[in-house]
Length: 82
Ligand SMILES: [Zn+2]
Image (cartoon, rainbow, N blue to C red; front, side):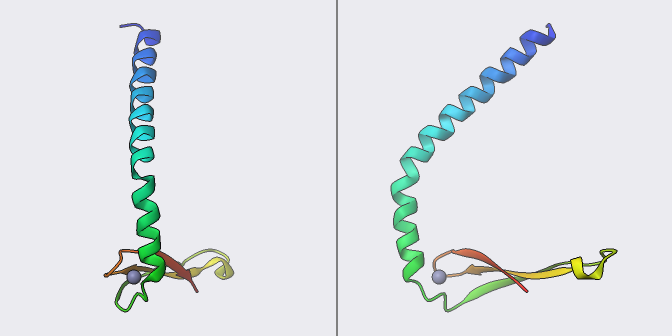
């Protein structure tokens, strides 16, 4: 198989994936909108917290810390940087 043929096959496969993703995204848009309404109305009473940090930088002022939250009720995910 020549390099050009191999690249063409890869390009065709990528195009096929792009088309399938576009089709799927078009289908889920209404559900994403509905999920956002649910998440916007949730008070997030119980969350799972995952603490993260980037330390050991040469310049200590570059060190940072954050918390990743996931609401167990509505599955909203967000990050707070400290
Ligand atoms: Zn929630």
